[in-house]
Length: 368
Image (cartoon, rainbow, N blue to C red; front, side, top):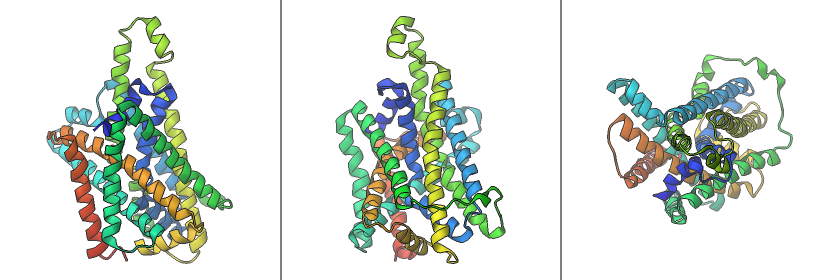
């Protein structure tokens, strides 16, 4: 499916500018940080512990930047993705453990994507039918990639990057516009930790360190290495005409700049949600999904907010779907030695995600 392969075309020289060839893949990867589960984690942490965890959220964000940067550097320098390197360096047992960890991370992202679009559907249409919400989410995340694949690899890659940029921009600006007076607490320089905050800390860490995204990112940007090795065999004048500053150093610099730029927006989103939850809830504590969603309704007071939220969730879900397809292929082939058709990587995780969403929403009673 060209929709999934189009992500690599951005890194392989089909983008109009060097910065866009690094910014595009980073934008696509960053969509994994914009789902309902991560928003609820930030709301829960803010409502229970106020500003005590803000500094640690910043630390987790910087850790995510470092991990993403190292993953991209590995792909650029070696021409191999991170899973291939692990396969060469580690034993079979360790590779299986890493593969299970990455697979669980991927399935969690799929579940959060399906559940998030379903919640957005309910908020907009005020329709509490569980089956209809999940069917809507399933159709949307499966239909968009196949529709865009008809545009061709290059056009689909550019369009997907524009969708990701538009989604991130809408979410960041939407939060800032709806919260022009978000309080800034200077006492966050000294976080207060306790045993009660351990669960929230683990959830915040998991929301920032997304294992399968590292393998996906390294797989996408490895095209830089293949392109660089091909170009150094071309006469210097021809290379300068098309890629005037194509060096490994400039690629590293551009990737680091893109990561810092995009993940600053991700941290800003988390900070606004956390601080808004701390300000709105005061003494109330959001300790479960339903209470966190009620608090989210209080924060997004504008009547247009639910529609914008659904659009953001749909577009982000589309990009997450593509990254999960690539990640699933990398994980299954290099960690487990199983090479499946692209269709299987698209449908199997979605099937597990739909089943898990129905179970948690209907059987376990998390959707009321």
